[in-house]
Image 1 (cartoon, chains in turn green, blue):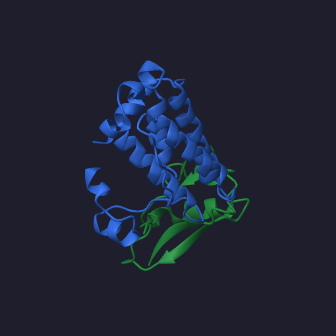
Image 2 (cartoon, rainbow over the protein chains, first blue to last red):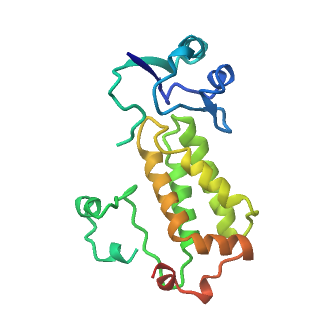
Length: 76
Length: 139
């Protein structure tokens, strides 16, 4: 099982805590809205990423279990 | 670009040619019209029409529209086009709806199709369209 980051853009208000906590995984744009990685989250970093998810003041960010074969971040 | 002139304005036909209807807006330009100014007008409209729910759309579209307005008006600095390109790349796929995706697509194809005109606006600080009709720019 792999995990990927999912965001509710309507909830996100650009506090940017996620990007501050795991800057190597979540980049912030100049308005402090996150730029999420397209692929699954590195399994060794799940703990840190979960902390970033838990710290989201808007509860906009979540970590989702994704089947290994499903391509994440793909746009229609 | 010439290929597009022969296609019917229909989503299926455009898709087959590897194109899309984008945000579904069609703007007709007169022979002497400035494509950059016209696009700046459409981008300003699309930025205003944001539902205001998602940050990348609210701030990103506004930033792109304002920057393109500066380019159209000849007030842009040398880094403006690079900023527009970066912001445009950060808009698509980062919203709850596809309004920003369509707007970003229009901006992306403008950067490609009107690249020369955009450069001229930045370099000369004005529009050079008077010397070069739009038909020539699109050929």
